[in-house]
Length: 220
Ligand SMILES: [Zn+2]
Image (tube, rainbow, N blue to C red; front, side, top):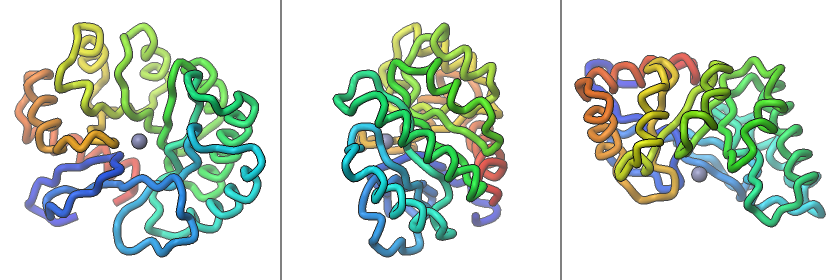
């Protein structure tokens, strides 16, 4: 990271920006045979795209790919009760990716839809940092994730928040917070500006806090 310049950190995106002041972690859910280049990447099997018949091969490919230093996190991976992928296959893939993250000592980026209790159950012995991304839930759903000490990443849901999301966002302590654009095409600068307004603290302060969080999780 360049010193003296506050970076905008986009902890989870599918659309990397060329803006030199944005440091993004670009997500890959396939193409694990391709060269990694110089970007920071996260790589994982997304519950939407898992197929039982190719799971073993895909996990092998991921294992080799994720060992490279540019892959700074495993994920997004997790559990999704609204997707067609069968539940047992999702659980198997999630378990294996948690094991991989532990083995490589890399953080996990979690995709979770209507399965927070189950995700927390699988994660209970995990010591690598864990980031639940794309938070857009009411506080009673997210409280157990906060209590477990995990990081929470917010994105587009902040731009037009309802009261429930606002309550959740304000309940997350600053040292557990990240911001992201995911697949929305939003600008991370806009998310920072909105986050600063919603928490009523200067944008610079959020930026410095997120740099600290980033440094802790990704050992920069
Ligand atoms: Zn995503």
